[in-house]
Length: 480
Image (cartoon, rainbow, N blue to C red; front, side, top):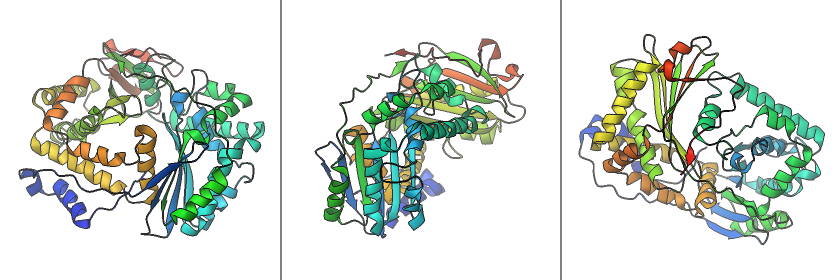
């Protein structure tokens, strides 16, 4: 999702030129100074525990309402997975005072939009509407927080359960390479670890969930004391506060939540797997355990991914895609969750190349980077492209609301976007070399996805364990 702040046009042009012009690539980089980023906001908390963040921006007569719940798949239990994602669907089926379909009529029907997303750590729901519909949007969110269960019966639950199952079939079970994420997570983390299962949940768990199981999950996690309401756009703060009090103050505080204690994991050895899928081409996936959102190394790890694969001159891309033309595509990136992280490498070969040779060549390039570190020019290009991506993302009220809510939820600081922006700009070649050496070790998962009946196309097939669609895996790394 997009995020937004105002930056002078000359600064945006400077970032783009830094990425695009040969002169910029060859010139000695200028001293980096912090670019002023400012999303003005105020925050307060209602007596029932609801945190509120308001940010006025009159650039357009629109407003974004973002309700961020601190609940995701990691808050589920083994055997009871998929609940958070299920509620992403259930929350649009109507609530105590809002019949099914009314939510869309009062948002999309007036030129706005609404949606929701779920991941391992949080679930959010949002509306973007013309500013004169702000009160309506606030009421919509308050009603489904306070009165969703008044309108939820077993028929609605079963209907949404079937929709989620269909989504799983489309996105995971019958999607080429669709099970990669599940296999990697189950192989990376110990059995029962909160990050070892997928956000969408398993068919068995979705089928086994009772009405009371689901309702109990809602009562605990979708309460005001586990939520952050962020409103950004053309608002009158005083009037907005009145509406928030009017609609949310009557929603009762939920029970205290005990959050799972989660530590990063360590893989002491390499784990090699091969999965036969209905795919036209083999694909190599390599994943290393790293660190979560509160660890300072996430910024250097993110830059490391750009140095390796972002852009035509990035090390892996240049060598394997353009120079040798051995790979059709390649990507390296840091994925950061609240408590854990993974650094991933994905390679798709061209005809005539093997996963074994591509793995060896990629490993050699990574080892060289670990020994030498990136050049100053490489670092400049990597950080500049990330700056441009960050700035480009901060272009909407909804995007700004996401930044403020994520900062408040994960870091207890809505203004954390400034810290993250400056920290990424401050990454040095030595930082990138250090994290490459620290995290890209022999302790990793190497997964080859190959066409059905062709396990010999895996990287080092003789050393790879076959994984089937019904395999539970769950024998991942050790908790540090």
